[in-house]
Length: 190
Image (cartoon, rainbow, N blue to C red; front, side, top):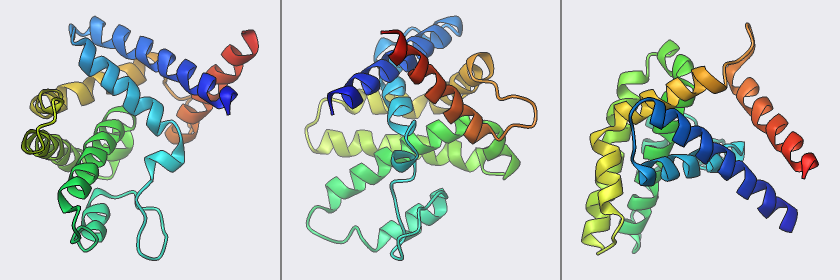
């Protein structure tokens, strides 16, 4: 368990450094946003975290439309506001990750504009819910919403600069292979 925590911390440090460096190169000097984006990258480095929403039949959902339609019926209970916040935060994170790190896949399938709009809308909803719940983090989500396309583009830049797949390589497998390679190399060096 301690080794997993160390690996996660190192992975987060790696993503934080890559995010800060990429953002700095693009003139983005917001340390809070860079740390949040590194958190998202660390979280979604695990496929189970990336596809954490499942259909009623147990199938992993990888479409924003499917996620929204499947979860509408589930969010009818007492904790509806908290469930809606959690869903919207996940959708904001998911669309940021996919439209940034896997932009070519999203573009190829014709989802980019929708993902950019839904990500912006989801983060704005999180900020409004946080405000209504008297949570202090609402300003971060307002910033992510207002500049969603900009941050998505910065992730696309980071992918091109630091995580470019080999010619003909599946971008998903290539990205995970690079992350796993970095973790293996750095864990054995220390």
